[in-house]
Image 1: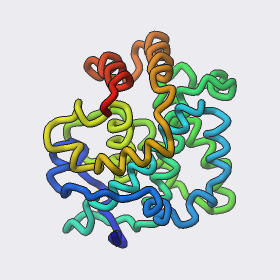
Image 2 (image 1 turned 180 degrees about the vertical axis):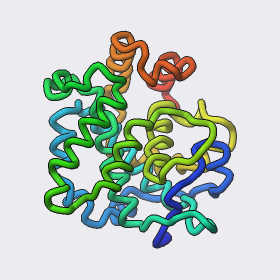
Image 3 (image 1 turned 30 degrees about the vertical axis):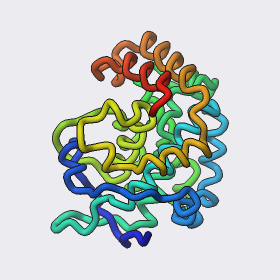
Length: 254
């Protein structure tokens, strides 16, 4: 299935407003999704190794599921909306890869994370600051990334689990927000006529087979411990988050 050359660079953050603009998706196989990547994965091997060093296999698999969910969602993502700035397909895929890959490094128990000066901040901000420093150190000298790209990736990480009801999100920010929601909670907790418009269930199952959900219950325990240590964290503002997370990770239908 051919993708547009450009996509809307900014979209409504509210789920209902966003999904009113998209159609029901068809099944897209993982092989086809990997063909979309081009050279993006090879171009950012340093960041993959950074994520691999800091994150458990469970978190890394979660991050990669989010990435491929996002690639699938590009097939019905808003494009060429009048008066809305556009972002090229290649540019968006690059930003989405780095955003999804690195969006949970703030949960890491690695010494690099636990001794970072921002460790006492909510994990989204803590991780965002670490990613900001990493991307600038690795890619600014070579001009592989610029200030604007790093800003979008960082802000998308910092706000990836904040369910704003009004306003706009960047394309990368909205994709990581929806994909993380789907991977954590599944289909059943979303408002009607929303998540089924994001991702075909067969596509989701195929991605989950390649990047298994093993260990998500332990991931939930880790998140719960983090929330107890940081009761003012952003996740703590989501109604019944832990109860919904536990229900989703123990459900046989996701």
